[in-house]
Length: 174
Image (cartoon, rainbow, N blue to C red; front, side):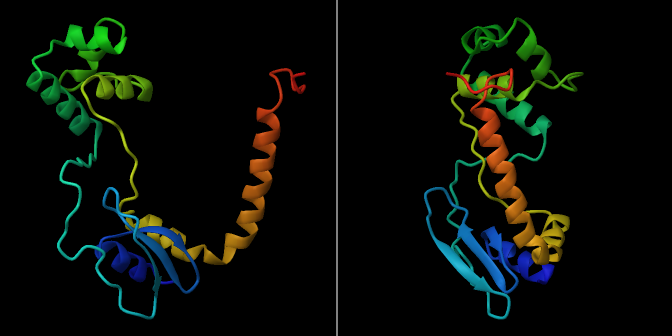
């Protein structure tokens, strides 16, 4: 598999869902779009959305700093104080204040970020997006290992389901 093909798929606006030896299964990245395609490495890759109608409300973030600024701006747009947001979200006093300030010494855990965002009317959504070139190269270079990995992943899933069915002492609850 050629990593350049995978880059071409992403440039055409597709999210890569699965990669085979011969091509890729890709889907539309736009919110609510269910379109999928089996794309061949030997054929032309069509654009998923030639008019680029992505969800205009989505805000892709590349760093905590961008998230912090977005949440602060939203809080200020709503006319709320940090204390009010902390109270509504159930955060400890000064926790959001310390997380929101410029150059924060500590970054909050994910639970706090989720509560903070929800309090301000945001939802956090993980949507397939472009993968870095190194990820694409690793995917392309490991297609010959997929079958053995599927067996290993299946065994790991069985072990997880067995351990989830047991109590902390290792025995199955009655």
